[in-house]
Amino acid sequence: MDAIYDNGVLKPLEPLALSDQARVKLTVDAEPVTEPADKLAKQKAALRELWEEIDKLPQHHNNDGWSVRQHGKMATSASSTDFWDNPEDDEVWNNA
Image 1 (cartoon, one colour):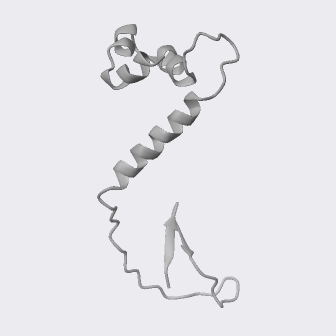
Image 2: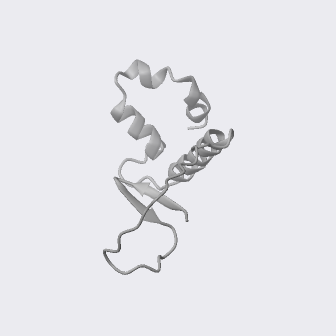
């Protein structure tokens, strides 16, 4: 039987034919956690797509042409130089 260990509790993935409070004997054979090599790349691509969609959101408060993400980064940057010197955003700024 397969189960997931969640916050100190084993949770079977399928219903068990047991009465409530039944005692059972378990043998645990933990499978190693393995992630596909490209999982991080897929997550980054999905995040980029999400930000592209967020950037398309209409500007309601200021109409300055900045995206929601650009405003958020400016507001949360440790300093203005961190914000303005981020090469990752050069393309975004050049198209703003």
